[in-house]
Image 1 (tube, rainbow, N blue to C red):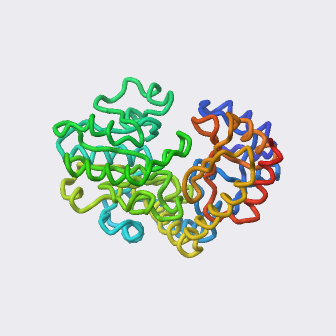
Image 2: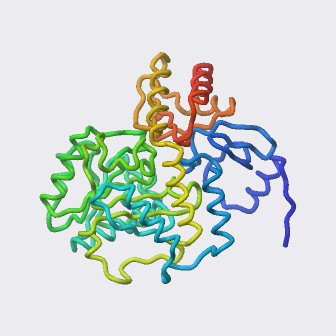
Image 3: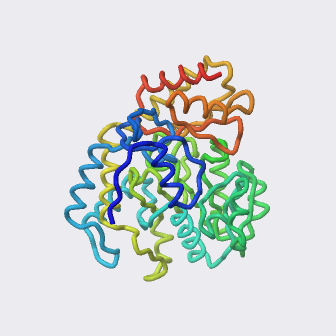
Length: 397
């Protein structure tokens, strides 16, 4: 059965509301096309996208290299499960592992960030024979059973009741609270977002990540970095793992999703030879993980970031944006790294500013901190687009 194409926003919204389960509170626009840091609505309006669809559009909307790779792969083979070998999967795994710190040698592909985090915790339990997982205040790790039970941000954990037992909560940035929970006979891993995005773009001191690594080594626990948002170039480096901001610390497992496929759903766990040695056939599994279309997207995404110098651009744009915002009196601080940034205001006005910017056709994000406006734009963002944003921000006060 065919349905007609419609472009009128009111008609699109009415149809979607009629047939789709209500979940998010949606913006009053229907996205139809995109290029770079811009999207165009069904009615032809252009919006500067500084949110990237939840940090997904790292290479920009419809990067030509990614689009070409998907078209080519779609004409060859859309999908076969990972029960068979695949050249496109082999290429994606090799390219991704080579972007990671040298201790990271193996990849497991899945479908999303929450699935990556579920499998990361499973890897830790299989490696150690223990069951408990330590995560942190302000943490968000996904919405499936184990991942939402590891989440200690606002109401999310409550939505997952009954929660999976064995999840412990430490204070983000406090090694003392981790040490107090880290029972050597029970705790399999410490898992954290190295930058807590949804909690208001919170970053700990470099010393904290070093202390976590030392404590995990001392007590036989794995260290897991949830880099679903920070990974794949978002911070101006391929990963937070191994970076100066994290004291050069490399975890035992890195989880990825969001930007990994430039919008094609794909997640991954990256790990070391030591952890991989504990995994036997059938310990992990997924039907769609590692599918050919997703793998083509992964390779093309990494190639586009490298080819276009997006890591360096993210660093340069961060510096430029910080400089522009330094002269805005309502801005108390700029949190984060690269193009995962939180603009902290002097008062609780983030939601108000977010709304005012949307009226000026600029998309941004909020957080659980009412003072913090989040920016998660494509890594190809340009200076003139930063200027548009800052001018609109100033005029919104």
